[in-house]
Image 1 (cartoon, rainbow, N blue to C red):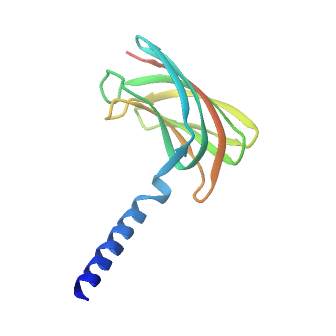
Image 2 (image 1 turned 90 degrees about the horizontal axis):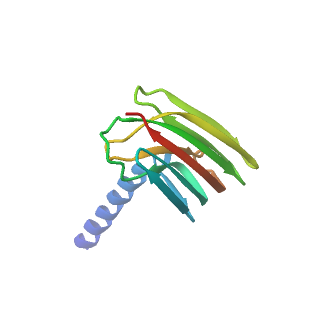
Length: 145
């Protein structure tokens, strides 16, 4: 009986920890299709997501530059259902973004910073408890050296 209580207590604590990691800062995407091409210090990624929930970041990966390196980014995004916000964060912390409603498309342009993981994030933010669907994107980038 004591062993059963211990297992139940550990499972409950684990569930509470996982619940604290999700929600407002976490996010997920399903049905991702993408194609990326790069040449030197610039590139383009085109693709789509079936759905996005929460705060999710598309990442241009495997950039061979230092963390904080600025890049000029142009993100063209369209959404078929729901709503989302697209954001870029510059090296100085300035946020450039736009909201998109179902059936609309938008282009967000500005500086973004290469992360500590060597990638270039473009944030897709969906209101908590909501889902955006049918997202398509073209993200062009050029490193500022």
